[in-house]
Amino acid sequence: MRGTMYTDATSHVPDNLLARILASRDHLSEGERRIADFLLAHQANVSNLPQADLARACSVSPATVSRFCRKMGEKDYRGFQMSFLRMQNTLHGGPLGIEMPTDDISIDDVPGAVREVLNRRVADLRLTLEGLDPTALEASARAIATARVVEFAAVGRSIPTAMDAAYKFERIGILAVTASYYEKLISEALALSSTDVLVVFSRSGWSGTLQQVASAAQSREATVVAVTGNLASPIAQKANHVLTVASGDVSSSELTGNTRIGELAIMEVLFTLVAATRPDAAARKADNERHIFSEVDLP
Image 1: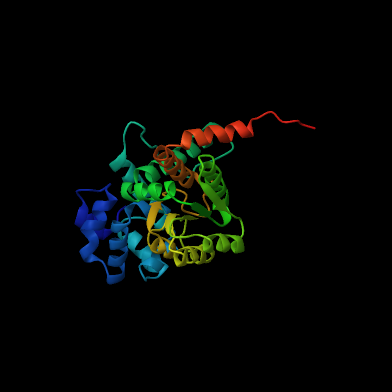
Image 2: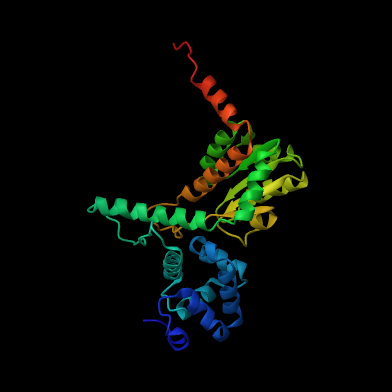
């Protein structure tokens, strides 16, 4: 059952959450209007934005966010995000068609669990790749292609993504560095120059460590590229270019875990664009493989 406000204001569009928000905006409190305006301005980010981060970005309490969701006809913030994801699927659906995720995963239904993971990952990939800003993507690729050094910085769950990215770009002749600890990340950032690039992976965009790394790179006038799920975060604000990750895994209780597939997909696209930009990429990659797979004496 939808909320009274929604029923009165937008009964002609019962399944369109975006229309619900637009039609209800004039009836909201000041804090709720800030939430509505923020969500409308950052639509690609909604499915991945934690409730606490949304409240912080809008200068309201988490309780205000919950109240806003109920006014939009949703039981809670989790339900609001899933409805928003369904709306995105409706608006951007196509031949691939995304079957919306559910919370029904059981070892008693292994094929169903496999389908559930597939549905979630297809949704993650589609929302991330279709939501990328082409201008930011092109600018990031050109900056990396002409950089002297590219640093990939991450903490926690994104460290493997940074390591994979550094490995990929080194194969086509770009000096790429990364580290798994704070002091090394800072040292690498301070060694950058105006011709270099820092790529920061931070899903929340609030990591204090990575804010310091970005500030260090800025002090050397390096280009900063943020791969994040939070456009309103401090790290996004520090970046020259922002590439947004979208994900349906929005809760710590998600049974399928917190995936890195969106970040990896963005790096795949960036790598492809950079390789296409550098005329020596194919030769560098071939030379790399020649050395790696050369015959060696094994013990």
